Structures are given as C-alpha cells and as structure tokens.
Image (cartoon, rainbow, N blue to C red; front, side, top):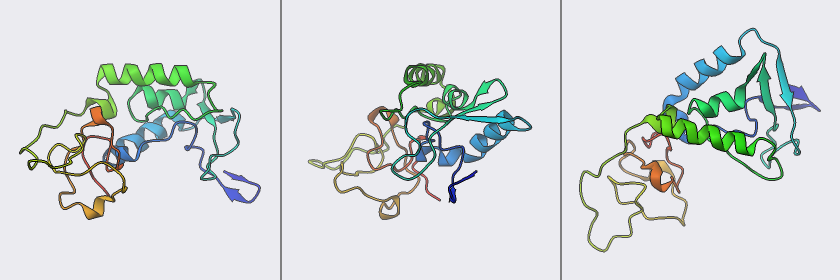
Amino acid sequence: MRSDHLSYSPFHPKIIASSGFRCQHARVVVTVQLLVAGKTLLLVPDVSETDKYRRLLRDVIAGDVFVNLALVREGYAAAMIVPPDVSCAEAFRAAEAEARSGGRGLWGLPTPTPTSAPPAGANCHPAYPTVCIPPPPPDLKRSGIPDRNSPVDRRYGDPHRFGGDGIGCER
C-alpha cells in the first residue's frame, strides 16, 4: 500500500506478530493468505496513523473476517496493546487468552525442560532453561549465544527477544 510516498504493509496493524513466530513463519503466511485471498480489504484506523517505526496501524477486515483478531485467536500473533490505540484491546486480550488456554499456535509448543543445572551462583534468566543467559541489560543478540536452538520458556517472557515461539531460532 502506498500513501504519501511511503510504503506500508497492511499486516503491521496494532497486532504485531512476535519475532518469536519466525519458526512458524510459513504457517502464518499461509493463514494470512487464506484469510485475505480474493477479498476486499478494509483498513480501519484507531487513533494513531503510524507507530514509532512508521508502520501503518490498522485493523484489517477481509470480507467478514477481522484478520487481526483471527491471527491472535489462532495463536499466530500476540496482542500488543499500545495506548492510545486501545479500541480493540479487550477483544485481543481475550483472544490471546483463548489461544493460550487452547494451546494453539505459539502457545501449543511444549514447555522446555532444562538439560542441566546452571552453574552455582550463576545469574541465569529462567526464560532460557538449557543455557545460562543473564537477564538484560545488556540486550544480547542471538548470534552471540553459542546454542542457537535452545528453547525459550515463554512463562518467563523472552527478555532478549530470541524467539518467543518456544525455540530460540534466528534467520
């Protein structure tokens, strides 16, 4: 979509797919294609035009499907509520809770278990149970961690944003 000589993607609405979904990227792409294929898209603004990264903020309606909500409900996106854009906040939170309790998408991956105990006295964040990674700061990058396929335990978040889908994968 073009507007005012800036390129925007209609799939950066108020729901932003977590970087942790990289390992499920193909499923997300197919799901989005099925939701929007052959349909007229309606892009509905809330309060803000763009976010701080200049991404267009819109709710996406394809036919009679609220695409943002469908992606959250299926576990392919996490609700990201950033005031003042809160018109659908409760619906997104409820859809995420439903996806979590139903074990769909991101929330259906098994909870990782540690393969070994962290070194005595180590400052290891519990989100990374199989490798000792300290909590931020600093904000570490995945390339600086020797085990790039270590699990991420979403119960503790993912403070370094390695991969919230349960596996710390990077492209």
